[in-house]
Image (cartoon, rainbow over all chains, first blue to last red; front, top):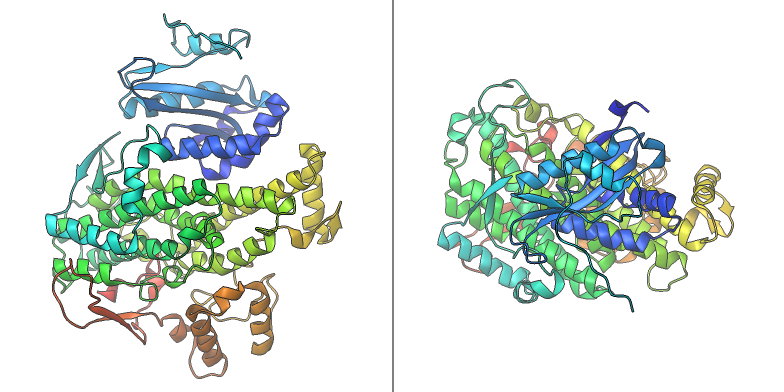
Length: 147
Length: 452
């Protein structure tokens, strides 16, 4: 796949169907109601920052996030990268990096001084992806309690 | 990205607040419950936003590369007149849509969808405020005889039936109209705002980014409920059917197409650097986007009706339905939602008052066409004044009493009947009959520059 054929742009309402389909391709579950709610949220909060990669008229990657302050005692405006998905057919085409460049630039323009994300250590390659983008491990640790 | 927030002079700000008390009575409820419905979202503020750091060179047209205009007085009078016409039209649409949404807001079946529409209405109020900010911040005396008070008063006096663009003169009949309007008519708004973001008039360009951010959610406030309706319809709900949605599309899509202006026009706006696309080009991009919306709605329907199918199988069923127009696995072609033909039910532009059917078919007899329309439009809409006026105009065109071009130009003309205070609730501009006599071919939004 020629990288030039992939266009990176802001998230739009017409992407809901494609992102639902891509999520199903990645995770094996059809969850339209999840993505209708979730994308409605990002379009309400910060449609500029959340981004998609489009090729051949469909979404082949997406990165969702927003700038918030006050999370976990972090008062500085922080860009949070919360959801990332890339079509396996387009991996190795720098789609993730290009999405991140657009999202990070938008976070910066919105006044963010830091960008944070959480990575599942069991998902090989995701941590390396963020390290390659200049992220470094942070001293905060996630905790979870199960019911 | 950084923005500058500007509040209007007090009397105009108060005039808009007064207007909202009448036409957006749930505004205070929304503000008081903002944190409940939209936790952690920035508080809503009724003000104008001006984006800082935008391009300062004209981006299209005859003067491309030259500095953008920071004052209307520095523009050619025709250019400024065109621009003021667009600002007035934009303001009219923003206030007009609130009046329409209010008619059926209470009929929502779902609280979340209702609150989304309410938020959207508040943001449309802000968009109207933004346009009035543009009217008041500059000196338009070279292209308008109206004082600032008169211009504001005229905008705030418009009612459903007297707005500048046709789509904003049509009553809503149910909450399906609220969400379909967001999905189709606000989408036209998005195209207009995106084009105006490159305006050669810097204050206009700087006004667009915040409006566009808000407009993105307005589209979602239409598309997400429509997707949910398709799921319910596929599962056999008696509360909403694809026929309801189809008829709402038939009602609004033609008006959306007409908001781009005559398909042959728009060149003046491009030459003046006010917009980067001519009418037909922008309209075609809009059609392609609506096609995607419709396809996604149909996928949602097929997947909900046949959950056992894989994604590829569901796509296959949809393709077969669209190709054969028959029935597959219990779903018929009529169960889906379809794009009306771009010539269907038109009253402006190239196909105005032609007898073109929903599927693109031609009709020879007027009565047959009216019967066709009655099958494809919502019952409540057909009983309203907009449809009766259309039928009356269509009848006159086909009897030879008037031409399609003349009938197209018929739109409400506001006549001032007295009063000076924009804070008053009294109507001092009334809608009369007749034509404004203007040709909208040169305008990308169908708004003649000469309406002032």
